[in-house]
Image (cartoon, rainbow, N blue to C red; front, side, top):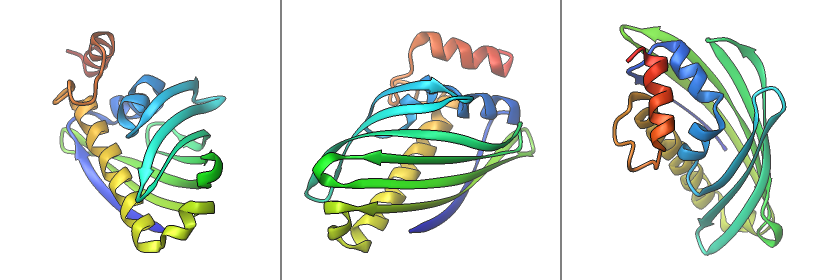
Length: 168
């Protein structure tokens, strides 16, 4: 499965870049994320609970960052194992570009699944993957812009961190 999209975030590229590398921001933005640890240098480990069609699973996985060109682009590559449900792996090439007083973030995502998940059919998987990507970037935009922060459960400390980055 492949998909591409873009959106404009009302923050300068350095702020968006810093948020992309912060495990607390990522945890708040990944749908179903229970835990996110690690660093950009060593990669991140995450536990995510998701229901895809009739299959509900807890995925434990790792995400690595590569091809990092601050604050212009990076590549995320990840793999998660969901026990009997199967596995998911994929990646995203993310690029940032100043646009007016904001940042255009564009992404190309690839994803593959195996096990019980693969038996659900490509329409269900593709629809689910698009929904996950859309939810992640909607939440990411809300966190970075400081809007609807309650919905994405960002702590007061993190709101302060983002405000300092934005210069406010």
